Length: 247
Image 1 (cartoon, rainbow, N blue to C red):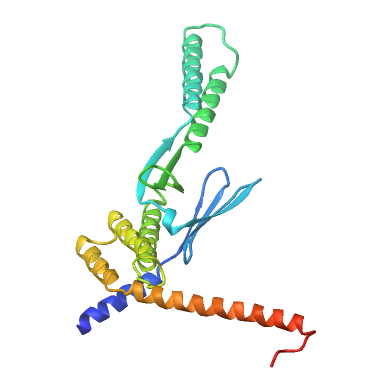
Image 2 (cartoon, one colour; image 1 turned 180 degrees about the vertical axis):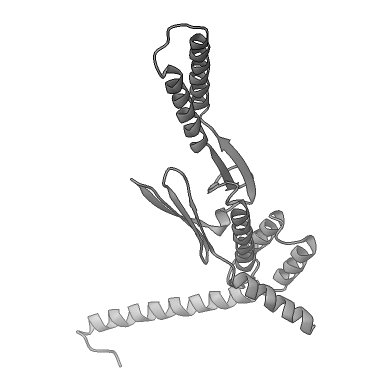
């Protein structure tokens, strides 16, 4: 038992000391900052001419990972055309044809420029979304940041699960039975509660005396209502007697 307690303490200590922030930069001079907070994640994006600050609640964060590669193929196509033109000019010069000085160098340079631009504008994007592809959180999926992004997402999902479980599995006699029952089923559907854990929680929920609480609450409301009516009657008597209380 001591070992189990030490293990839980060690895991909690490890989680609290993990890095809760992630920063990324792209070739367009955009800066992306992600910070895990108490109830969700904050996304800050800063560019040369614009910036944004977005907060996403843990309940709205999915666990579906989508990888997307975006490329401007038109740049690659133009680069190939200039390369073909450079080869054609070189062959014509080699065969003794009249060619302007440095023509093939110009075409090769233009081909290289468009090819480098194609490489620089290539983007690997990782989305963390719900099962229906909504509420997607965007990360840069470069090879350089792959390990860092994966570690951060794992921490984020662990924090999300702990928050949701603590919030929606805690039973409260002041909340309606149906609402709490639906919360437990929702956690089970998210695979955050096992079937056995769900049954245990439902049994605990069934043991709460909601009727006794509602009865006490109803009596309290009656007392408050009676007190309010008494105040109104006293006020009426006071007005009828010219401001003197009836003895």
